[in-house]
Image (cartoon, rainbow, N blue to C red; front, side, top):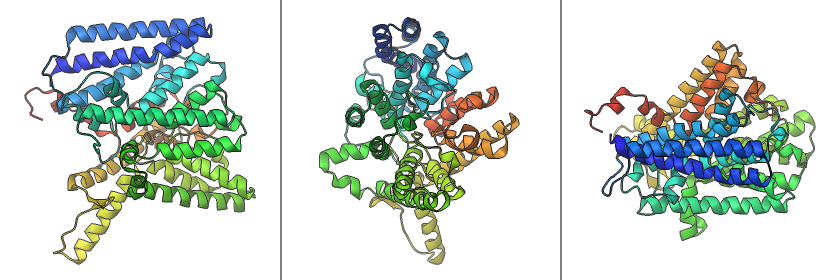
Length: 486
C-alpha cells in the first residue's frame, strides 16, 4: 500500500471537512451565536492543521493511481477521521461531553439519525444546521461527494467508489469514475433542492425546510424540533415527506440512467418495483391493523402507516406518531421493513432489497438444480445475469449482518439492557434507522444507553455504513503487510 497516496488524499478529505464547516460558521456569525461561531472556528482550524500534517507526510504525484488497498484505506480511515473531526463543534461548544459528541457525529455521518440530545430545541441553529449537513454529506457518501468536486483519482478511483457505495452491485453509468461521481452528486443536489422547495410550499419556514430536505434525501432523519414531524400536525407535509423518503430509497444510479434514457428505466428496475411492492403490502397490513386494533379512522390509519413504513424502510427514522404504541402485528411489519432497508445504491441503510431478491433466486436455483442435476441456470436481476461471486457475496453479507446484530445485542445485555430492548436497538442501529422500539423507541433517544453501549454503537454504525467488510479488511493484519499481494 502506498501510504504517501493515502496520506495525501486523507489530507484532501480533512480540507473538505473544514470547508463543510464554513456554512455553519457563517450562519453562526450571522445569527450572532458567538459560542457556536467560536466552536466552528476551532473545528475549521483543526481540520486545516490535520490537512497540513497529512500533506506534509504524503501527497499526490502526476502518475499516481489508487489501488485496491489504497481505496479501502482511504474510505475506511477517511470516514473515521471525518467523524472524529465532526464531533468537535458539539464538544468545543460545551453542548455535549466527548462520548455523546462522538455518538452524535458517527450517527450523523453514517445516516443513522440516532441522537443523544433529549432537547434539540435548546441548541443554536448553527449546530442544528451542522447536524443536518452531516446527514446529507454522509448520505450519498463523504468520499463520493469528495470525488465529485475535488481532485482526479485516476482509474483506481473505482476501488473507492466500490468501498463506499452500498449494495451488492456497483453499476457505472459513465466511463470515467469522476464523471460517475459528479452525475450522482448532481442528482443528489437536484433532489434535495426540489425536496426543500416542496417542504417550503407545505408550510415550513426556509431554515426548517432546508434542514429537513437534507436529512430526508440523506435518509438520516435528524430534525430541528423534539417532536420531529409530529410537531407540525400537517398531513400534506407527511405525505410529501413519505414520497421523498421512498424516492431516496431508490438507486441514485438508476435516476442518472433515467435522466439519460427516460423514466421507463425506473419501472423496469426489478429491485425498485419489489421495494414499492414491499411498501404497499406493509402499508396495507399496518393500516388494517391500526383500524381493527386501535379503532383509528381509515384516512389517519393509512397516512400514519404509509409515513412510518416509508420512514423505517428508507431508514430515515422520522416520527409522526408514536409507532412504539402500535399493535404487535404492525410492529413486526415495521421491524421487517427496517431490517430490509432500501435499494442498492441509495442513501438508505438496511440489508438492501437487491440482496433479498438475489438470495431468494439463489435458493430457488439450488432447489431446481436438486430436482434437475444437469440444469444450467444463472441468477438474474432486472433481466441481466449476475455473477456468482455477487450472489455469494449477498449470502455472506446477510450472515455478517445477523452476526453483528447478535454481537451488538450481546454487548448491550452485558451492559445491563434486557434482551428485547437490546435486539431492538441493535437492529435499528445496524440498519441505520435510529429510532426503534422499546428503550430507543419513537419518542426516546440513545441518551438512555449506558456508556459502553454508546461506544459500541459508534463502532456498529461505522460497520453498517461501510457494509461491514470494508472495516473488517482494515482490521486484518495482512492488509497492512507490505509483502502481501492484493
